[in-house]
Amino acid sequence: MGTDNFVAVDNNRYKSVISNHQRQSDNTYSCTASLMFTPTLTEDQGSEFMCRVKHPNMEEPIKRRVGPLQIIVTPQVIEPVRFSLSDSGEVKCSLTLKRFYPQDISITWSMGEPETELMSDGTPVISEDDGTFDVTSVCTLPRDLRFPVYVMWNHQSVRQPQRTVLRTSDLPWRPQIEELRSSDINLNTESKIQVKISGYISRDLTVTWHKMGTDNNVAVDNNRYKTAVSEHQRQSDNTYSCTASLMFTPTLPEDQRSEFMCRVHHPSIEKPIERSIGPLQIIDSPLMNKNEDETTNGQQKESSEV
Image (cartoon, rainbow, N blue to C red):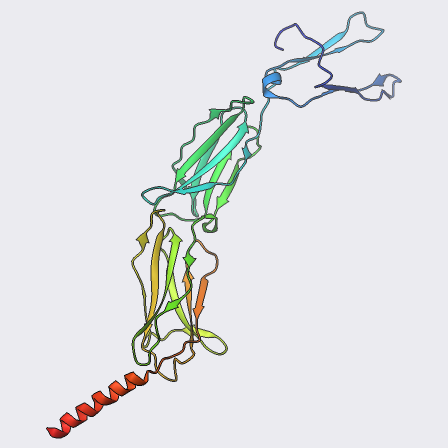
């Protein structure tokens, strides 16, 4: 243990083995002596070991020493990268590496292709139980975020730097799409179908509307149908929400029992999310027709009197 006061190893922790004696070509023998153990930082860091060989044809044992030992412990990724939202709506990423030794470690963040290095911070703190180190590195992603995002760490316990690749699908915030809602669909009266979208962070969101036919669906005719997406509203959890609408004046027989689909695209989802409604029941109110007839007759009477 760093001095000349060596003591015999504890057979409960250390296992010593001598291989079978092998006869050589000159009729002498050879063997290999081994000491096997599982090192711990508290007991074995900086220790020295000595092998003492005794044999009847030697007056004094032969000694060989090794050490001080340098024990290294590889960083462990206990949990994946965590994400959080700041009050200003910025995305913060944090990576925690645990139980490594020695203390020196480098962690870098970058994004995009080609990679652009990002600012980060992380200060190792000593663990209370076994003398190893933990570190948490935090990176605030910029507004002009480009995926993928890379986090790489380098430690003398690994032969080459290790890294994790983050993609948009790794973000915990994805659009939540409610069911489509509509008011009464009255003949020749402007009607509206709408859907609420919430829980997303990037406002790079697009909504398309499709009218479903017998075999497939096609984008709505912009001459007949008007689409709109409301302003993105920031919620208490710093995510956004909006309402997408489809407005049109239904006619017969074109819109009777027709079906519509809303398709939402967002960078955080690999495939668009779809919601549909229908078949629609167009209401042709007799009272409405009566009023229209009375109005028409009144106009005709006035015209006749003139």
